[in-house]
Image 1 (cartoon, rainbow, N blue to C red):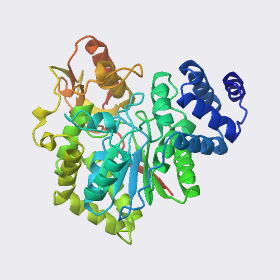
Image 2: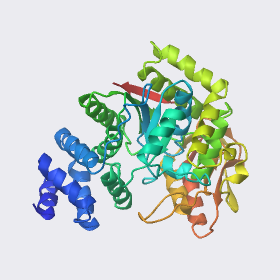
Image 3: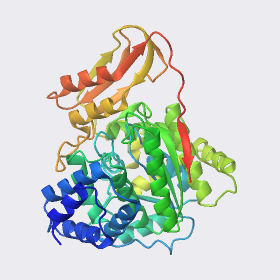
Image 4: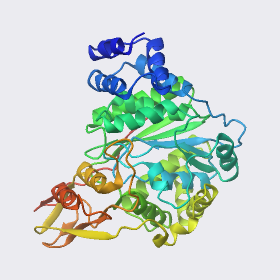
Length: 434
């Protein structure tokens, strides 16, 4: 087999065989195929897409690049939650602890920042000492004792996805339905799960800009899960503006803490509670989704979800006091206010522009070897629908290096739309698949 032939055939829209995809993934993981050839293949997939048959083959090949994590010996329902990526989306760190506090075992294999979206691992690693590289035995032990554990791709678990994930981020091939589905589902099926809740984002801050494409992705992933005998449900949720107020790694950990203490933004709280309820219900701890919602709400109000996150942070080497004392987290050295040029109503906040601006000042990566500045980001002061006066603060940019702040500020200013009339309210949860 020759890599160039597979690139050419995929570029021409042909379907590749299972063994061809398996060879391609295996050879790239072993370092036998260079980045530039795999980048060309990814771009061909981006333009020509993949059939369901090819996506299934890619999922299996990526799982086969490492070891499956058998969790069957751990008592209790094992349910994971995954988002397709958004701006300010920190729901995994809220829904996960709430579900775990209710008795669900929550094993998460999460990702890093991708394109203009943040990554759960990068957020957690802003906590001093926090480890995302647990061994399989450490992961199982923590899941059994704490009920919640978060790791990333590793040399043993879906290493192919780790390499491809970084390459997609650096080659503008992130927004491919097939590649998103393969990446997410390979991580999920590498674990022994009883259920999976998917949060498929749609809007300016998501990879899927149209609801029809988001639904297609949701159906693709739930179908892959069903074929693997895994109970799965996908929520299609709005990402036309950032979720919550904070965008940036340490800033989002602060907002997670506030939300788990029932003092967070209403949109973030609502969707996190719904995701937690779906996890509880899929874990068969309640007979109805309404009952599961009541359980999730109770775990928020009684503080047990907040305590569960603290337990998880401590178990993975981090300092749980960061949730109470934000000065223990990385903090920016500079701040810039963005003010409203006129009075009116906020009719739109382009989430992608906010995400890109945050990345420019260090919250994301331009190249796959780049490091992330955990302290930087953007904190909104307003949301869509709010009335503002001329000169009022729309948001603040937090930075540690002034090099690209002016450019980022221009991008942030352009993200806000102000009109004379209040916009029609938009639903947060748009559809449910599965």
